[in-house]
Amino acid sequence: MANFVKYGKIPFMGTMNVSLPEDLIEFVREQTRGGGYGNNSDVVRDGLRLLREQKRDHTVLKRLLGEGLDELAAGKDTPLTRAELRGIAHQAKVRGKTRRSTAV
Image (cartoon, rainbow, N blue to C red; front, side, top):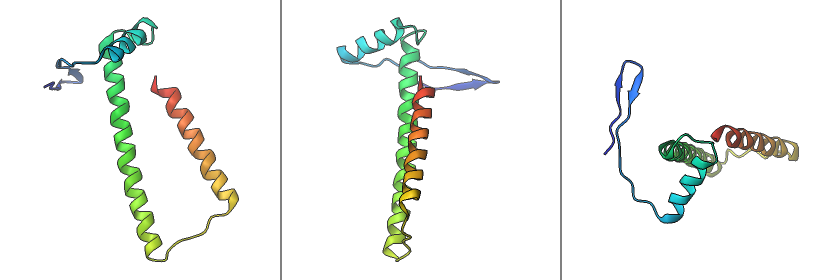
């Protein structure tokens, strides 16, 4: 199991052996060959960071959905206009594009 120990401001990284199917091994190699990553570990670390972010987002969305459902059950619903819905959709698109552009 990998342990990260901080010494001052520089994190020391542990190592971990991971078994991957051949298609994922090739994908990692392609990412490294493509020049976007310095080595295979960089690819895996980036993928794990994205997974962690996705899990956090999922947790937040679940909580917000629960709050919304509780409000609906309590009769606290507020109808949205078409313009408000379009604005929400636009904000979601902008956030999604921003995330995708900063993910690599």
